[in-house]
Image (cartoon, rainbow, N blue to C red):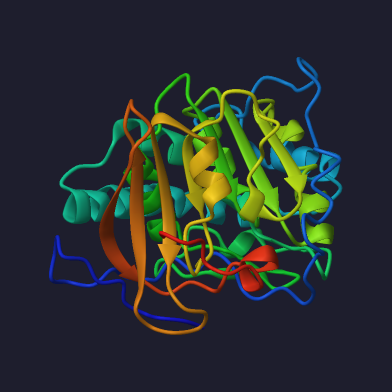
Length: 312
């Protein structure tokens, strides 16, 4: 579903797949839905973080899945077949970023190399693991249940790199989905926060980080329109993974001076959406730049019933 090409002024050739991260939820949470009950990971409670380059075996995968409440069983041959596709997928990402952005950020590539993507291929509504879908030759979004999807990995690589994540930073993702995007950022930054509006999905995905040792990821169920104002000091990076009709004012307020926000803006279910990059200077003034044309499923919740603020 969705646009098959993602056009950019930087290059004339289209991207291989569109970065649709969200499909419409079956139900909307009320205004400021549950923004309580943040799903924090206890400090020091997690194991050492998983590094796929060493120690990521079939047994390690199955144990992590079981600890996250998503048991699965693979044969050695099945697990080996998945791992054999990892290298070509990483090469595909590196080539893609070089073609679109001039180079592949080593930090972004290292994060992709460390995070086991097969761990995130799961159908939550059906309680069914689908790791064999990971590292596909032709990247595309994959349904994960409750109307949500795991975005194609090329689109995620592109958005991660234009976020320009750095060590020591604090990030906020609007639309947790599978948890893969926040996991990627967590391998680079100091703390990674994420909000999911679909309650059963958000609660299930909150359990997947600790088994990998990702103890710097914190999630909550709620309406991302309002951000996460309780996080003291705000965010260096805010990444929105659904199309907004305008940039929510609360997100600008929570963006640190020198920070940047990546957000698709456009009308629901219509072409002509544009990925915007907003930056806030040291004086607090916000600057915007049109990046690429995209097609995302709309942001739900308060965005659907709040008028655009005057002056936007």
